[in-house]
Length: 246
Image 1 (tube, helix red, strand yellow):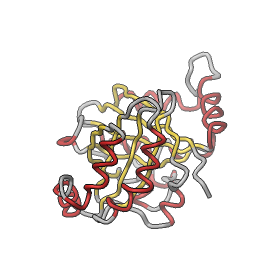
Image 2 (cartoon, one colour):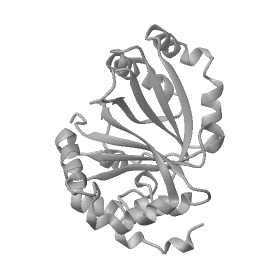
Image 3 (cartoon, one colour):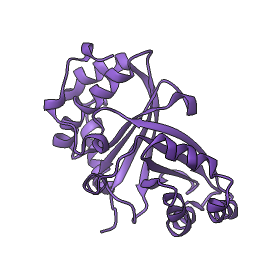
Image 4 (cartoon, helix red, strand yellow):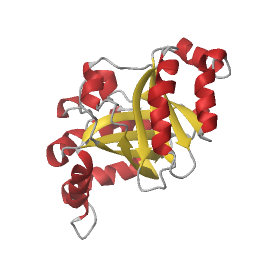
């Protein structure tokens, strides 16, 4: 079936050395509530590999049941005078100790990509993940996703990577996409990076050039309770005292 979900993508700025505490607070303490109250599932929580991007940083990706599910999520959160879910006031207060702020995007998946339950069922997992932000001329995002499906996916996966998700950024001029690849080990990553100018990826480079696409890639690593790492959604039984996390 086509992927008809909608996603919330978050870059989160972490305070000091609180990344482990924030990731646990987000997965074990938030996800069970989000599933029960909002039907919002965790697609991924990752830490950015600082040598490849901003640090300290966490990337969150949330899966909702289409635009109606996203609207219901907003209604649940924002129908209060405080613009905050009262049942999560204590959660937000603790989270603010671990993070400063961040930048969010709404993502629409390419219909041929897999939602989180299918990825888990298929055993997709990475030691690290390549996260790409692709910038395109206005209107070209759908063409990019078509080219990724028809040309790029097979070529990149021939190097040992697995496509986790390909998304068009909504509420912008059809000019930005986000792509995430699972990488099984560090040797595969180094071979992939060294292949960037080689013959194996040449057709994909030409396709990107034709689209006038530019991109920036960073590396991510799963949080301890990320769904692709543990093979399920985080649960209340996973909770630990935050002061035990370093």
